[in-house]
Structures are given as C-alpha cells and as structure tokens.
Length: 380
Image 1 (cartoon, rainbow, N blue to C red):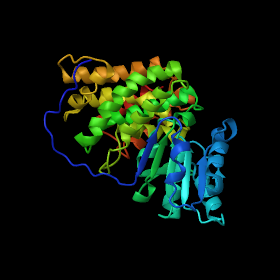
Image 2 (image 1 turned 90 degrees about the horizontal axis):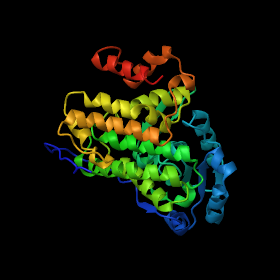
Image 3 (image 1 turned 45 degrees about the vertical axis):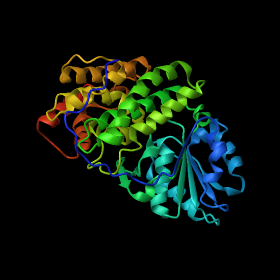
C-alpha cells in the first residue's frame, strides 16, 4: 500500500451539526443503552420500520418488548424511496395516538430512517429521533431527507430538527439484512466517501480525513462480508463505523448537495424504483473516471484514495485517479454486485436526456452535459 498523498494547499471551513448526542456500537448495544437514551423516564416512543423487518424477522417484536411501557405504537410498511403516502399515513397514526409521543425510533435502512426524519420535521422539535440502522446507507448521518411525490420525483428537505439524536450500530440487528443489500449499501457508503474528495465544500478535517479512513475500511471489509455475512460481528461493526465515517461529519456547508454519482442516483432511484445501493454500484466508478478528467485538481484529490484501496501511486495524478475508478468497478464486480444495466430494470434509452436533465438540474447542453450523456448511455 502506498502512503496517503497530501493536498498541495490547505484552507477551508467546517461547520458541524450538533444533533447527535450518542453513537453506540457493538453487539448488544441496543439492549444495553437504548432505554437510557430516551428523553425522560416517562417517554413514549413510536417505531418506524419496513415490511420485511416486521414480517420476516423477530427484530420489531424484540424492540417492542425492550421498550415495554415506553412503546406507544409501531408504523410498518415503509416502502423504498419513502412515498408521500407512507409519510402521511405515519404522521396520522402518530398524531391520533393519545399518548404524548416524544420519541421516534427508526429501525431499518434509508427509507425508515428518512421517513422518521421527515416526521420530526412535520410534527415538530418535541420529537427525539433514535435510530437502529440495519444497512450501510448512512442515512442516519445527515439532518436531511425526503420523500417521493406522486409523480415519482424525490422531494428533499434539510433542517436541524431532522437530525438524529442517537445511533445504535448493533450487528445483532443487522444480521437479518440480506447479503446483497448489505454489500450494495456498502457501495453507497463508499459513494459518500469518494465524492467527498472532489466536493468543493469538503473540509480537509474531519470529512476528507474520515473519508480516507472509510474507503480503506470498506475496501478491506466488504470482501470479508461477502464471505462471512452475517456471522462476523466484528466485520459488520467495522463496516457500520466506516459508513458513519463516510458521511457523519461532513458538516453543514454542502452547497448544492453531493456529487455527480449521488445526483445520478437520485435521477435513477425513485423515478425507476432502483435502490440507491444499486445506483451507486452502477454509477460511482464511471463518475470517478469522468471527474478525474476535469480541471481544477479533481484528479489529485481522487488519487489520494488509491493507497487505501491497496494500490500504489504511479506518480501521475490522472493515471492514479483513473485507477481509483477502475478499482471501484472491480470491487463491485468482485462482490457479485454487477447487477446488469438499466435496460434490465425497465429503463429505455429514450430516458437518457430525462435522466441527465434531472441529474444536472436542468442543464441542457455543453461539454459536461455531453460527457454525462455518454456516461449514462454506458449504463444500459
């Protein structure tokens, strides 16, 4: 492994968000610490979760039993990409409960977590959000989230009251996550970390420093998880911490959002029903290769990731950055996540300009537009 290269100049600003009060990790941390993180001894909590965890695992009933008298109700059936109807159903169910609900506990992946964040925004600051993630999507890391409107368009919000108060990275809750979902959301976490390196507002510390750590952990542990999930609790915990490192301390100054791989993920995800872990598998490596060729130092910043991926610098930033993109593509394939193109998911080539327009937020021409069109065409 080559040493991590250094930036050629340093200046910047990092603005933290202060919602998170506790981050617990390790086997059994939910059972050990959840009750003590409730806001008061009389707190009443609603659980927000999806259908699979409710019907196919013991986790929901296990959590309800742990909460005991603090359990006020459970909202199940939260679907992928958070349809607005699910948000409205959950809001109504909580508001008509006679108890004074002060806590939301999200259990699952990005959809239940984002739903809980939107509920906190809608219902008010009196709600404390505790989360038990069961994937590596890192949705728990940001004070923002959204839902899909009836037209299939993702509507996003960002507000302090959407921040999570406590995170529980408990591998005993993640052990029921199917391997393909665990690994593909790991690539989503990789997406967060990699796109930090060329984000114009990313601070060197802590976000880029943690991104370098996260990439190294993900490249080491995802292949181990391919072979051992869900039996190796140490690897599972390391991956959950890497997911947090990829996104948890990126701060508030994100400008227009994340990078091109994320933008393409949103353009592909909700409109065509593609999970975001899968969109990252499709887009990230190719986007890195595109970004490497842009002016402005992107290649140099991307090249800093190569050592954490097990590579050695060839002394040329562009060549090293292109190798980073190639190693991501190879990692996806080695994990068995080469899931075919968009055509297999019912997306026609006539959608290319629509996808590119969504990703570039209305840009309709120019060099970048043409390059992104070429990239999206390779996804079929």
